[in-house]
Image (cartoon, rainbow, N blue to C red; front, side, top):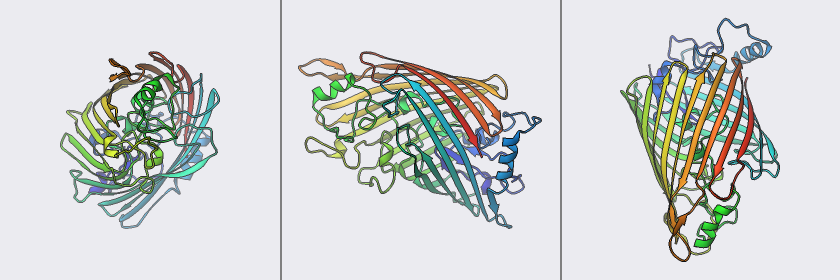
Length: 456
């Protein structure tokens, strides 16, 4: 049956609905699998509930549910419908993530506030539908104070919506179209708050470089002195870009699949990996300057997932500010990376490394190398420890008056987190991060954060 293999990426996650004969009780954990570019079969063997716990790895089945669990179980009875013949199925999921962060000035990556703390709630609603055995549709709506933490009023957004077509009864070929997460790397496949063992993202997915896409009245074609002086300024979220902006929910199409131990995905999108959220939707940025991204992975056994990724395209925003004539193809970003994950018993380890090169118009190439190593250790079914080491290094750039100099401040950061699963539908995390930069501190060196995730 195709439904066992049908996959739909949701913020880098894929919903895999149970095949005929499997339990469809609303209280049963719903299998969640990564997209075709990641360890699909491995996670299909160990399905995850919407709250993120691996089947058989979460709260003990014998534990007595509290009032919140009972209330959620009752609510879940009304979240799914299916036709009598099984030709149509609809399911909804809802969860609330609440982050509270305390830091020094300037703020940490992607945070925009004039204060030394920020409260960032996110209400998420997921709709997934299956039409027969070969066609699926997924939509994710969110209400938040900005896609990334920002001091502003609450707004709502349809973050993802896409169609998935699996023409055959095997996952060897899967077609996807709409607005959805990138296939690059592995971290995107576990970036949901109930999947991420820490609170924040790795540095390569959130720390600003000094490259501008022409937003926030900053020129995409700066002079050499102005460009190099940016490393002496506080991190500019409205105007600068990271290597990859979070899950990169850009719009376009993807072809992918799984064949034996191999996974593959190739996508053509309207914006690059580093593009900001305001350029992700079809109507926000056209396909005049598309980005091509791909990943090939291999899973030698159930413990390992190894892959290589690449991406190339223009990083210029839809309406850039320029100081002279600009051809967007003169402002491109190329990214090449490798990723690996390993799991055995209570221990999981992930690592990614990437090289990114930006072509700065009229100035030349700017290179950066970035990597992270992350681990999670489950002390018990309810408690885990997680840690991550990050580093980002900048290449040499022609200096004003001759010679060369680094175009950015080399940075390292260590993240440490303790997680607690309160019950089947709630989890709590406490994290501390310390960041160090060569030269001027462009963001806070100390970060203390707590997070509460509630499914309902």
